[in-house]
Length: 286
Length: 85
Image (spheres, rainbow over the protein chains, first blue to last red):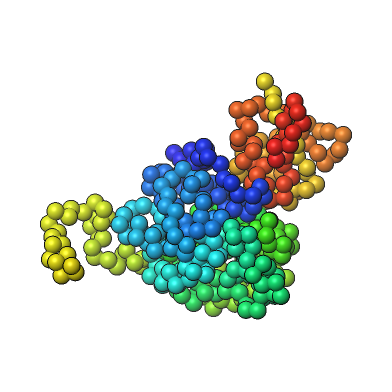
């Protein structure tokens, strides 16, 4: 039995009090506890940014990788031992900026990992520059006259890249976020949970109040079908007075691991390697 | 020995339920979807509730206070009146 308390570390987060990151960490711990995942079978991998500190404050295995590189590390861990539950976390600058190539290819590859993006629409750790998801016209230290380019739409992008589970949560609604993360971890394949995560210190536009006024839950629309990709794409374009959260799209298809014959009998980490000789390869390369 | 108290500003609460997730023994949501400080005492202000806590419960309640997105929860050192959060 894995409890919420067991997942809580002695060291406490250094995030600003009231930061949306608290809600995400809380929801992630609740989801792991509700799924009763053994702590030693969970790995949380992070990139760089405020969100990147998260593995330090959850009592599972963790890996703090490089900027934008949480997904390559997470995929490698999953392929080395596909019995593990691998959860990657990162920010919008980390994942949708420098890491966007990895993001697209991990989705179409459909490696069975969960990717939680702390999307605060700003570079918070570096004290407030426009990020890939900052809104057009957004004024920041790096864009004092307003941001010229339109933002990356991670939900539309994920749908276009054949992501098999696409969801958006809100750090200000923890019970709803727990449900989304739980479904994402249970999903067989790459699961994106983009989380609207207000940065209370540097983003004065996309605040908790801003999102409270605008967000609505897709599941409250009884006619919404999360297996309909065209409808999901239409909803993904909705951003204004109303902003949808919830499960946009889900499909069942084989994971990357399913298609690798080398993994069909056992995880790589459990396979014998005493019959493997790489001397010739070394000689060729040297 | 009681050293701290929780001070809760209910009119500030927006019902994010972070406190309930972090410390379900201390917090719950009511039918208005706002947080309720379990066994909290009323004060002179109808929107302010307080509850004394022991040192052993301090860390859990600090976590709940930090998790609140609108800073509706405060932790105060009783003897000095110093606001920790």
